[in-house]
Length: 180
Image (cartoon, rainbow, N blue to C red; front, side, top):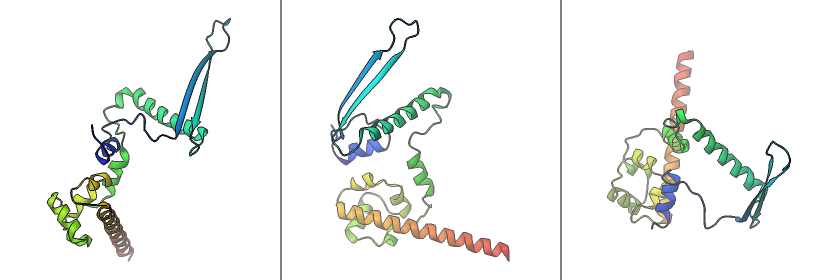
């Protein structure tokens, strides 16, 4: 059995399909099928779903979200020809595509010595390697506590923002050069 962040990271990375949770706001779900007109040749049924929550979410919102998830799953399953080409977890791919490729030492992130040493021992020496790590993967690195992980996440975000701002400035400069 696996516990904690490793299991969570596998769920978010798409290795498991999360079907249930111990901390679900849903207390009970009752499903009932009723035949509407038994004398008719056409079979008509009514579906009744009763959802009881703990009060943190409304049953209407739960049903709406569940319906979206089911429709998304059936759209994927229904498109058999494209099953091999569909990536269910595009969010991760988009995140990595937006990350600039940088071969700069992690020293440039201005991290604490403890964080730098832990990252180096884990084999991460460049900023681009740190950018590819998810928050869960960071929290699994030996000798990194919650504060260190949060500091690395913050520094990563600052670095990414500065790089994207530099790219925007360079594009504006190039556009101004072309206009002259």
